[in-house]
Picture 1 (cartoon, rainbow, N blue to C red):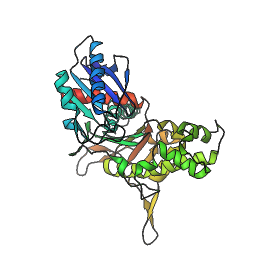
Picture 2 (spheres, helix red, strand yellow; picture 1 turned 135 degrees about the vertical axis):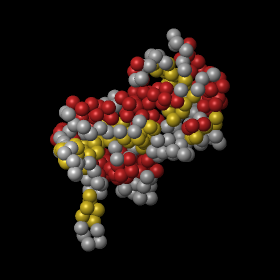
Picture 3 (tube, one colour; picture 1 turned 90 degrees about the vertical axis):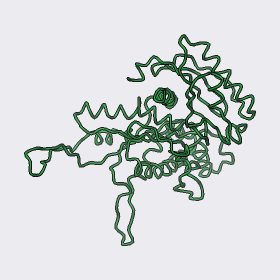
Picture 4 (cartoon, helix red, strand yellow; picture 1 turned 30 degrees about the vertical axis):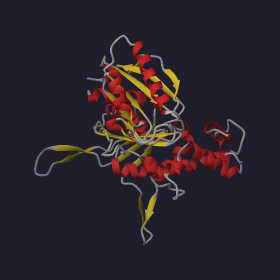
Length: 365
């Protein structure tokens, strides 16, 4: 049964370092206008009370009794057990906080907590890039279908999630898809997040222009400078996003090797894809050199930028052909091309996370 035909109601929460936003979903759609409270993340008791009050208010607005609570919460955490560990953005959460068990006892409902990158990937696999690509393949009469997807969130941090054949990869320690800690391609003493997030773009621009306060311009400002819509050092702005793209491209190369599936990018920085995507694709399409000076591709699959019209046409062009099965009169369809598409979310990060949270809860009930 499709989640979009399911009438069960799940209460949700979008948990950020500044605000908690509560709602509820039915049939894959939001049915309660978002309710926003300050997170009070520095004060554990106040923050927990806020969470309880938020869900109580959502419940009071529902016509049908909810069947679960499901939401994304910052990590590190033991997500299956609902235990939150030490958090930077919510400093009151320290030493292990049994958030899930607390809510289960308070509301007498099953509670599911996951990483936002995981739920983003899950939502895109259910209602975003994965079904969109497969629908296009079907319309064009191409037999190949994609079953695996990597979801990337670019914003305050660098997040990720992996879905393989419809299943969300959580890992034995709730650490599946924690891509932020990959090595930084350009500054190897740093992790990848420090080269592919909001503060990275600000830092890169400041380094090129000599401004003393990197936070004086937002990434949106730097993007608008880069595309010529705002005054500033255009070349520095372009370079700032190209550096982000290079770091991201290295991360995506590792993920492509491991997962071999579609890649979809969301988060607050995803709207600047025109400036960072070419550098990311260039990195993925780069070559290694042997000791003899011979070059061979960084990746085995051919990489396509699904935001680029020419690449998109190439991605949906097939070399499928019929080949004979030896010692028989039968034929089988064979596709010699290995293709990986890299796209940007068309349904939006918040919606994808909500759909992921909803679907995850229903899959566990």
